[in-house]
Figure 1 (cartoon, rainbow, N blue to C red):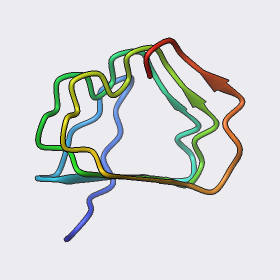
Figure 2 (cartoon, rainbow, N blue to C red):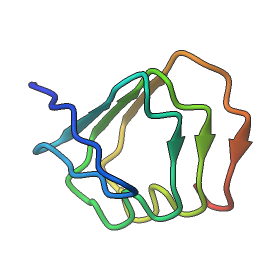
Figure 3 (cartoon, rainbow, N blue to C red):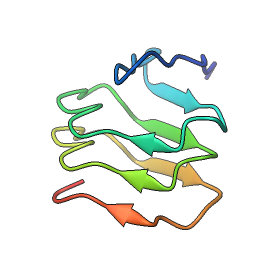
Figure 4 (cartoon, one colour):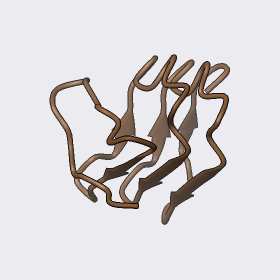
Length: 77
């Protein structure tokens, strides 16, 4: 599976079934991937904060990889 580095101000796009968040992305905002039912894999090597409902409705998400400790985890993230 090929991952694409995609980041714009509070908007993330899923590349088919996975998303790669580069090290400079430290926060996944509220509802960032909400409703992305095709999302299976998330790799976020700089993420330390995950907003509320960030992955709400991601029924196929089966792998989430980070290299830091989560400092803040939003409601129903």
